[in-house]
Picture 1 (tube, rainbow, N blue to C red):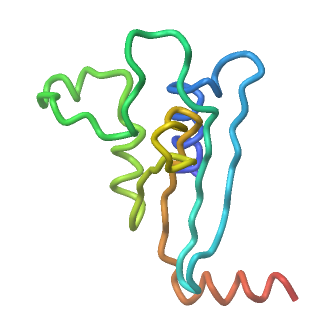
Picture 2 (cartoon, rainbow, N blue to C red; picture 1 turned 90 degrees about the vertical axis):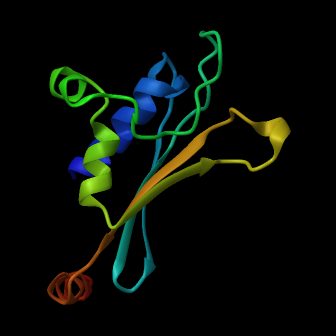
Length: 123
């Protein structure tokens, strides 16, 4: 739940999803029997700002002190630590469609007990 919340917050904070009439599409899939993937699709680049944002990434240029004092920018770090894998990609992979949205996802490995409980819940 924490990772889903961080993915959503990232979309709202860094895209048109956070503007009036903005949207976020949430996804929940099982790409494999033992994997759960949560993802969000944002509305793409905000029109204001001098340059379009890059794909989501963990800030790499912070000192230990800057990390300790930072009030923002820890969401992807949390996802990196808690998820088995995570990543992002453009919603549409054509250069002329750049900025139409980003799909940001995180995957989690299901334990046998969780998989059994999930399978039993649907019966």
